[in-house]
Image (cartoon, rainbow, N blue to C red; front, side, top):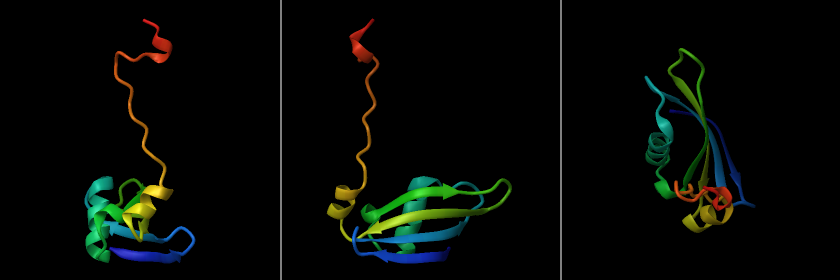
Length: 95
């Protein structure tokens, strides 16, 4: 793992980290969060991976991530995930 850019954003109470990870296959968001948390010695619940990019045929992955100071800061700033509708709940109630 190589850190390319590490900046502190005092207004949003977070670190903005851009880094490169070497892996044989796409590490996925969960694995990337675990790797970042272990390497930077921060709790996993404060890490948010914004993008995970690679180019065809390469084993390097570029990751843009945010590391918040607290869980409350993360919940306050990050957008909430939408819940999926159940199969029976069609739009407008039409059958």
